[in-house]
Image 1 (cartoon, rainbow, N blue to C red):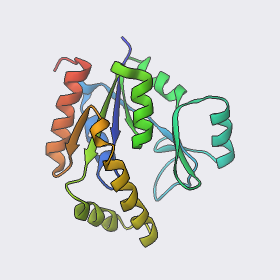
Image 2: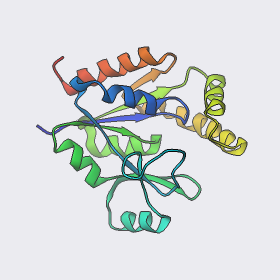
Image 3: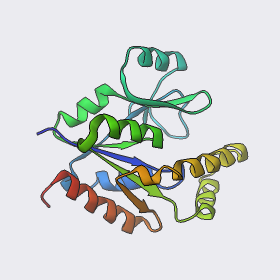
Image 4: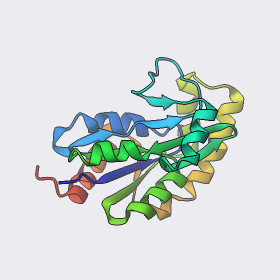
Length: 191
């Protein structure tokens, strides 16, 4: 049986990657993570082919031109992210549910393309002050980048009502359980 598509979208610093990592540990969800492609350089300990497919801007554009993405977006000036169709097929054809970490525009494009085979979940920060503190505490971004991420967060939050489900990441165990339950209901996976 072909797997379904679970889309998680949230402002940077909201915890969606941590939520996804916790969900993947739960075998009853039958989740496999979609590895996105990006034109940015790796950060910290990120590994090509594991965290992202790191492509040069030229390689990324060639794949766009060939129609190899199910969605892509220039998220920040000169920095693109996207999901390769080969990644969607790799996971769903194996019978696993594909979990995707994409921005709001990508989420809307995927939902439009896959309809009822996709569940779009928006992860909301408790509030903007908490989000700003999380971004600063990561210690990975410049002040300019943090301010840009906060502005983008306000824009992304304006899309939350277009998602199938909105959850607030106030405490990690609670939001993981809430999302887990929603995925089980959507995918009809027997506990």
